[in-house]
Image (tube, rainbow, N blue to C red; front, side, top):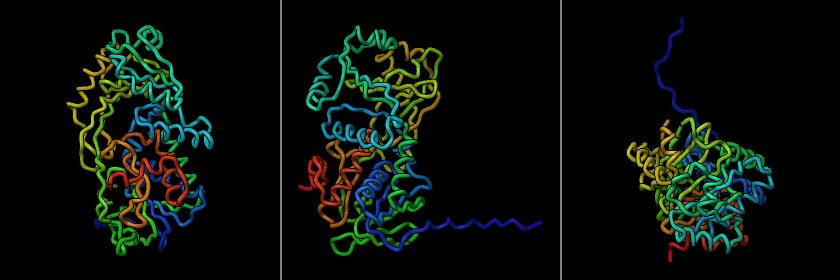
Length: 381
C-alpha cells in the first residue's frame, strides 16, 4: 500500500502575464462589465484579478437580482436604462424576467419624488390606488399602503446568466481573467500607478489599475494613499415558504416609505427588511433578530402573505455605498493611472453593465454624460 502524505500542499499559483496595460481588481459585475467594455473599445492587455476561487462570489452572487428602472437617483435611473439597452442588444430579453416592479407607500407624498423622476426621465409607469392594488395584488389585502407606481419594464435578472455572458464577452475580447489572485496593494512609482502586489508576493506591473473590488475597494485605495469614503453595509435576504404564497408571475413588491420588499423565488418568495448596518468587508454573519424584524414589516405591507409564510433560511450580503449614495466611477485625480468603479450601493445588477461602459469611456478620454457627476473628484474638492 502506498504511503499517504499528510503534508499540506501549497496552493497552486495562478498564471499571470508579465505585465498589463490595465489591471482590474475585482471579478464581480463591476469588474467584468468594465473588462468587457474596454475590450469592446479595442483595448488589449487587460487583466482582471479576482481574489476568490470563483468570479462574482460576494455582492454580485448574494443579492436579490432585481432590475429597478426607477428610483430617486437620476444617475441610477439613467444607468439602469443604459444597462438594459446594452444587454438587450447582445442577449435579447433572456437576461430578464419582466414581472414588473410595484413601488408602494402608506401615503401618497412618499411617492412624489419618484413620480417627478419618472416624468423627467420618461420612465414608463402606471399609477395604482387602493382599487388597483386590490385588483392586481390580492396578497396586499389589508395593507397599510394606499398608492403604488407600477413599472412593467422591471423584474428579476438571471444573474448567473448575465455574469457568465460578461465573462465570455471579456474573454472573447482578449481579457486575461485570473481567479484566486488576491491583490494586497496598489504599487506606486512616485505619484503614479506602477502595478499591483498580490498576497503571494508576486507583482504585476500595470500602467493603470481599476478598483472594482466592492467592499474591498476602499482599503485598496488606501494602499495607494487615495482613500475614498466607501462603506460596506450589511443587508439580509430571507427565503419564505408557504402553501398560499403569490405565484411565480407576481411582480416585485417594494414599499419605499417603510423599506421592505419581496419577489417570487423558486416556489416561494424572497424578501428583505432592507436593513443597512455598516460592517467590515467579508462574508457577514446572519443576524436572527434582523430576520425576525421582517415579519413585522411584512405584516404592515401584506398581512395575508405574512400569516401564510414561514422562514426557510436567511443570509446576509454586502452593499457598498459612497458618502452621497451615488456610484463612484472614473479617474482618481490624486494618483495618475488609478481608477474607480465602486460604490454601486446595491444597484449592481441594475446599473453595473452601464457603469462598466462609463469606466471604459473615461479611461479612453471619451465623452459620457455621467463622467462628471459620478467622478471620484466630487469628493476631493
